[in-house]
Image 1 (tube, rainbow, N blue to C red):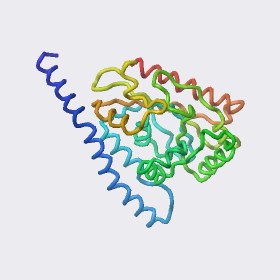
Image 2 (cartoon, rainbow, N blue to C red; image 1 turned 135 degrees about the horizontal axis):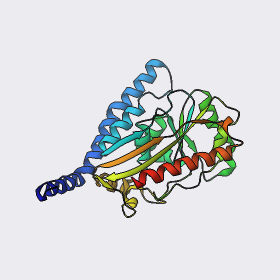
Image 3 (cartoon, rainbow, N blue to C red; image 1 turned 120 degrees about the horizontal axis):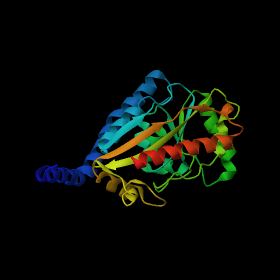
Image 4 (cartoon, helix red, strand yellow; image 1 turned 90 degrees about the horizontal axis):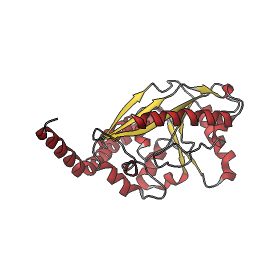
Length: 269
């Protein structure tokens, strides 16, 4: 690379960082202003509560945020699939939502996040109260009922966001939704953010991408949008069934191992 071309590349990155947040916000608002009325109209005309257009919204949002998505493998294309993924950032939602036709299982707090919560509810997100283990059985039944209605769901079994250095241990309790349902497919999915402006993501860069602990959403989202061009990679691992394992804990361990191995491979490049 010549000195002049290197300088030009740096200038492009600075330009993107300067206007990235504005572009991301404008893109999100534009996508919402088009998709939300169309979604409501479709539900009225078809007399159904089923979500039709979230995947279109998520694709537009990911593009507006400057995220390029690279997939390895394909999501299972049938009804009643439980997609099980690791959780790194709030950006996981538009990234996975852009490639998988399924509703998310999210913590109940998301429903109260203003416009974000309203959009999540419109997309038929299933809310669970992770801070109240006593309600695990009730929440499991809600998820199982949605699967029984031929819906597909995306579950984050770590129960929280990781710091991006590794995949956290999976909580096996919600895997019990597959008990007695041998026709439900469980597909492990790995998601990782591997490059920013063409450069590999380092440990020092991870806090800019991973949404950790009690970090405020909007400041982190604005900082994310100013980073530049982000590459997100997804691995769709072979799907399994409950009958393939002795119990749900064994199934959870399998999904955790497969996803963790995929994450290490993606982050090593």
